[in-house]
Each structure stands twice: as structure tokens, then as C-alpha cells.
Length: 324
Image (cartoon, rainbow, N blue to C red; front, side, top):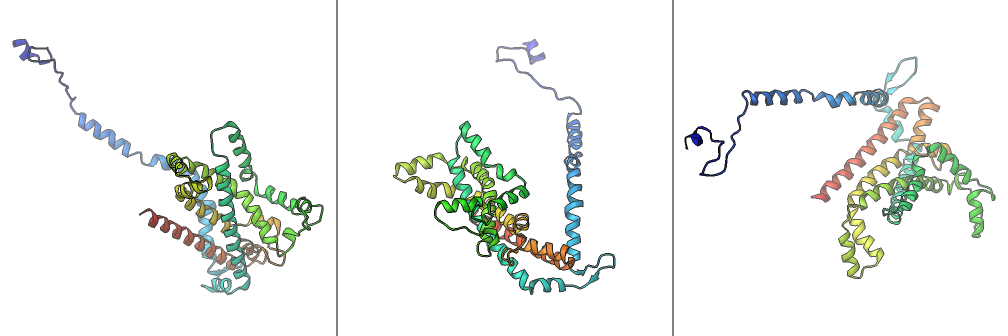
């Protein structure tokens, strides 16, 4: 018993051995110093981000600030800029050409957004699975996204050849339809550009939908099947509600992509024929770089940015309201 009292770590009849831990002196202070050193490294992530942030600052944020300043000035290169206030904005808003270009932009953005999301969802439903063949097909379907837009525009320009022996006109001739002017006809030019945008944007939406389909509860499909729901009904009542958040994200991305459309319009029609495909971005380009009205062009760019920002904020607020 004397040994047991002198050394508590030795087993005794009273019970199993107990081990006492001794905290080294100054342990709390060492932990505090270690935490302080870790907290002092808050700048480490910013150090890794610094090169990208510098590129963004020089090539994006500084030009944006310059464009905002130019929108209030009569820009005269090498002669000095003259402050004109909101005169450039008034010129843009009261211009018939700008209103027509804005309407064309909205129509094109709406058509491309709806078409690419609908086609992307269909492709995602058809290619959902883990088969190796499906992986190859998904990779092949995604190619239009990674191909440069200049190559895509040139490809479709060749396909849209207005003569009867053009590629798409030859296909139309097989079903008894007459040749179409496509991008050379004011009545079909907008739809032709819209089709090109849908073809390019749908594979991107498909990949986002494929990622969203993994979060849909499979038990709901089985329950709906037991209740006698058809495949189309299961898609409408199970898949679509399960992808609600994906739809909202894709809507924002596709709408912004549609509002900022420029390259395909510029390469395919350059706003023609007869201004039937003139959009805001091509109009800004012509005002700023072709007519040397840089202040008016900058005002149009700021208005387009504000419209895109308002659309993003509205969709975000609607998402928050639905999630409550």
C-alpha cells in the first residue's frame, strides 16, 4: 500500500493502473505562439493570387475605369478630352440604331439561352451514365465549346452558303424545300446566328446539367415509376424540380453570354444585311473604332454592363426568395 500511494501508476487492489499526463511547462504559451505564426501567414494565399490579380488589374479593371471616365467625355486622341457630362448617354439612348441593336440583342440572347438550355438538358438526359462509350460521346459533343469561335463562325458561314449547292441548302433540297439565303437574307439572318449560338452553347449547358443530375434522388424516380408515371412525366415532375438551382445558374451564364454576343455576329454578318443582326456589341465597335466616337461607344458599353448587372442581381434575389 505504501508503494501504491507513492507511485499511483502501479496497479493496486483498488483497480487498474491510471496514467497521469504531465503538461510541459510553457505548453499554452507555445500553442499561442504557433497560432500567432499561422495567423500571420494570412497573406500567403494573396501571394499566390498576386500574378493573376495584377493581370486582371492591368487588362480588365483599369480599362473598365478608363471606359467609365471616357463615357462622360468627348474623346479626342492627341488633342485632349473634353468633359461633356451625360451627353454621350443621351446620344446613345435617343439613337434609333441603339434601340434596334438593343432589341436584336435581347431577342438573340433570349433565343440562344432558351435553345441552348433545352438542347443541353436533352443531351444530358441522353448521355447520363458511366459507360465508356458515353464518355467518348460526351467528349465529342463538348468539342464545339473548345473550338475557337472564329473557326466555328467560318464553318457555319460555309454551311450557310446561299446557293442551291450549299451544304444546308442541299439538305433542304432533299426534303423538297427551296434554297434559303440564311445569313444573307434579312428575314432569316437572326435565326441563323441564333442557331449557331445554340449549337456552340448547348454542350456547355449539357456538362452543367450532367453534374446537376448526380444530385437528383434516384428513389424519386422509382417511386414515380411505381405510381405509373411515364418517362416524360418523371422528367417533368422529378428531374426538372431537382435541377432548379442548376437552371438558375445556367440562365445567368447563358443570358450574360447572349447579351455580350459579338464575335459570331461580327464574323458572320457584321450586323447586316440591312442592320437586321446589329447588336449592341457590334454597334459599340463601329462607334468606337470605325467612327472614332469613343465616348459614345464607351457610354454604350457602360449601359450594357449595367443591364447585365441588373439581370444578375434580379435572378440572384429571386433565387434567394425561392430558397426561403
